Length: 166
Image (tube, rainbow, N blue to C red):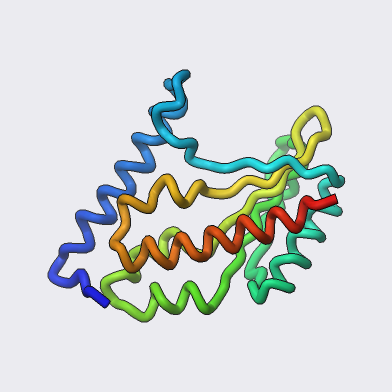
């Protein structure tokens, strides 16, 4: 593996952050689709609780761990906001995270870890699963990190597909 020592990784992290910001601005202001979307969204034919349960079961079956669930609508309701259900689920696969975290030079990427998936219900009652559009950011990453991120992203996509299968 190539190591990015001597401060060479910092510019890559800066480029990644700048890319995220630019992609968001481009997405917000673009009508022609020149930039890839920052997130992918998949509709679920199930209810909110059933979608959460199906995703967690599929993640577990695939060997992933659910590290944390943040029920944002509940947290915000305690602060006086009324929202439709939203849960952000942190999932991790040791086979992928260890490949990044074992290299000191790649540890700054831990800011993007673990994989996060959001399951939410909109005001019409429709349920969706969203996540970062990892392939859109791969060109900004070192090759070794991009390879691992792509593999884990592909597996998350399969987990989501199985979760929403009727």
